[in-house]
Image 1 (spheres, rainbow, N blue to C red):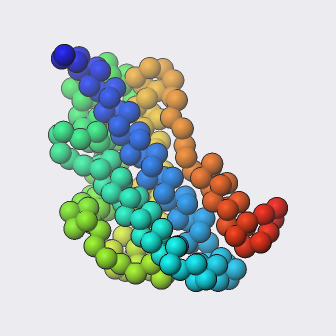
Image 2: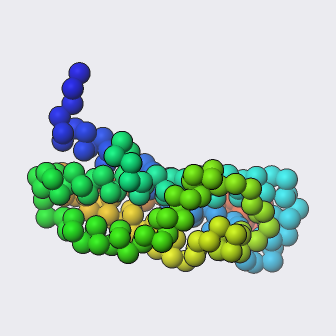
Length: 196
């Protein structure tokens, strides 16, 4: 059964939202555990290295794979470039949304997008989970602070496109809940479940 252009756009927008949601959830969990930097957390990570090492690699791989997919240029994907192209060709999909501004924003991230594509295409080959921030920045060639802003902006653009399509934005942000759960789990593992 053929679907209308609007239904295809809605399906892609939902797919894009899922990619951004998962990338931000992985990012928040990584920050809560592996980038926390406090001595107690580092001791816990070292004590349970056989568990946390693979977890860090899996979260990092999936975070970058989802982010790379969210900005993929392949016309078959549920990505921001394809959503923006559809919104430009059919303005009724995103009335009032600054599509041109989002396209300009996206073009400003070309170096990061190129790095994400290269990582995805190499399947995020082996890396050491020792110092995760150093690994991300030096070995993978991605400025983590900039990447964090990039993910926040991808979420913001998803909300904008949802709001433009239906007049409301029902796009959950995983960061607050993932941060709270990760923090509580970390405190529990450190022996202080009621701590800050």
